[in-house]
Image (cartoon, rainbow, N blue to C red; front, side, top):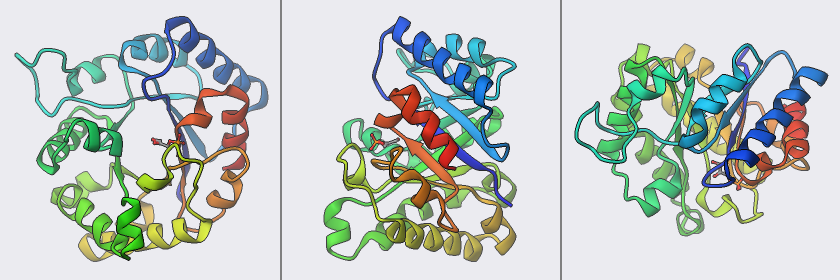
Length: 253
Ligand code: 13P
């Protein structure tokens, strides 16, 4: 039985005191109402709030993730944040290859592969993002695109490394648009990804890999998406910025 993950990606939002307030509300809700026992809750704030977040989450049923990591180990890379630095802050997860980073920061498959390897070497779980553009889906190339994104990056990992990562399927056309993939579309892609993993590694590895859905997932549509057999939770953007909505999503898992 795979544990579900509800991860909030705050993206580049909020100032320090707003971040402090939101995290306090999320933690208080989990303390008061208890989250479902088989659900991991992960919050990915902007990097400058990671120390605050790991301090606040210490001893609580909330895990903290980074939104990005450097593809370099350490050294003269001004402005970068290394996997070792994240490890020293006791960060548990890191998002890799979000479509916004692929689009605006031209992240290449080589960089993404390096990021995943460095995170694993530092004991941090990568949440590897993949997903097609609207044109890809309209041209019926969505399976091929996602298969290439995975095949050119995380399929370079050895089996025991691969078992430590989480995948997030985020169709680009659904991110921040209010256009969610239907539960059927999500299930179809998640089952396809799981079949790719079974073929590359093993049925057992595929069965234990957690695959999250992301893209306009909110308190109204979460339960139906998460009810699908191969959907193991969500990577939530906009709706994770509201403590009440996020609490509802956690309870939908
Ligand atoms: P939205 O939930 O705002 O569509 O964002 C999804 C996302 O990109 C999470 O990483």
